[in-house]
Length: 377
Image (cartoon, rainbow, N blue to C red; front, top):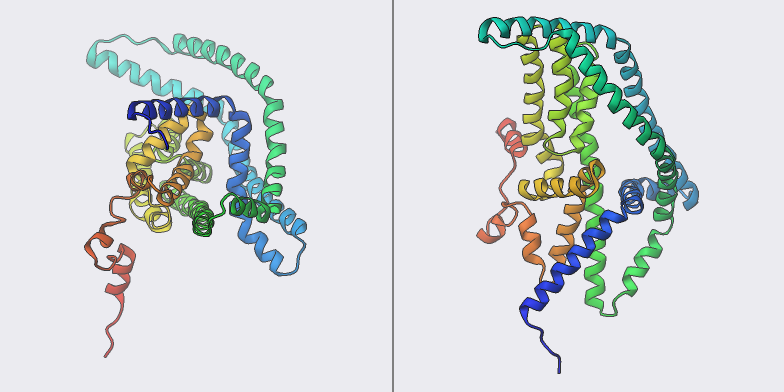
């Protein structure tokens, strides 16, 4: 006869297990982060590898070509951004002098209007240089101590990706053999397929969103005549991988640069307006249309996951937060007794058509197509 433990003992054991899990995740970040990023890239490369294998390519060659294609795309993006950044860095002395002029104008205006005395530009410059010198020393020492770790991680990621893709059938057999019940095996394989589908759709959707947002940002900045519009627009679009706050961070640099370069408040407001408008389109139309139907996570779950990921693993944790929450939702939906937690993470509208028994309401793009469709005579 099985013994049933009191509820407070079960809850205490669950909290203790969760605490130990968080400690383990924090301590093993150097091992887990490369594995998680490699798993995401492996999910992204699975369709390419399968297509090459259908063309009678050996698996090892198909995987190697897929990894080289991914490395080529990433290298091209980094090269474009680095070139723009080097051009931008050459004007640093000019930007610094313009910033001091703007600060002197602001200081005199504040002194006349509010009778407040701000430090002059010489004191400000000496304080800023002292702070930069101190921070630069700390950053250099930290970079010198972590360079070997970064190179080691970068060398391990392609190896992990190759192993994940090469042994993917072996991993499926392992999961299949974990259970003996045919029904549980079917559910487990369905969950694995769903995780693969959600991850691929999220990553492909994210890349599409980044590309569209980059075009919108660059177009808006070019219309305003902002220098380095390609760099600013692409940089801000890449930061959309950090949900909600990435675009805000990306808009700060071009806004400050525009104000320093032109001294025009309205020009700066125009730059901020461009990013605000693109952020509105991205949050309300682009992302919900491309990835919203595939990754049904409500805003609260995304924000909490973003904060927890940042506290746990910093910037890499913030990048991984959304796909990990999506994977958790898939697992919760398929685990008996955990369905309420999957419902809690999901979109508030995803179960409304099922409860009402009616068809799923059309989205905004479908309604536009229906409105533009000519009636048949």
